[in-house]
Image: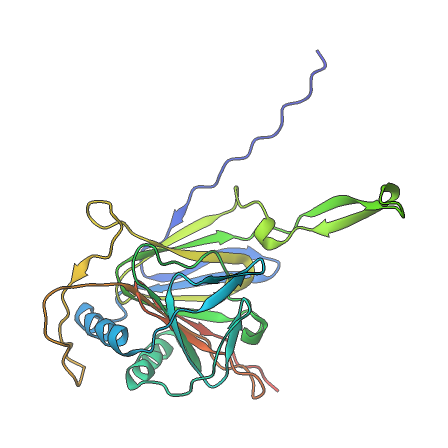
Length: 302
């Protein structure tokens, strides 16, 4: 007769899929509004084919060592960096490299023209196959400034760009310890659960398929309130390998693509941030494989 009341149930929110061109406000919160701008086909297919093959063949790709919980591991992707300052994340530093190839300069200008943002650095990521990836993360490094804008330009096979809302902070009570190591009834500390330890079961999730030549711009509070990763779309037959695609010479290019038949494409990503103030500059990132993205940080008044 006096049983415990039933526990309230929670439903896992359905995944929201964004595929059409446009600007989307994906969340409103204490830190502000998070926005996405999706521009499929920023680069025409034939031009994107040619640019992809050039970047794949000519950029100085290398595999970096990173660290997780104090242990070193090889990143499951290839990268290269362009910017006047070095760029550090997860205890891994990329040296400054101000020698931008002419083709990357043109891509930077095209992204700036469409987004209305200027960029001064670029991180390139190459996902060679379905085994290459990047885990859940936000571009929230201090060097990028507050609320950076990220522009992502994708080349190659389609990858699904997944976002998940970061849950609000949760405080957990822990009993303090007395002099002899025993629990002390008067000592109770509140510990803030770290982001990576939080429960993401019931958070909002968004999926954005990023096809060849697509631009995605993340602005507002997106880096504060959301995490993201990339997932390779399965090829016909379900094996998840890159699909072959022929390369053609675009009308606007000065040099023809290399002769040859259909090529299997990886995925490329271009990531570029805009300049901050005169003392701090933010790097621009570019990645090859299925997608590219760029970061932008608004200039601050002095």
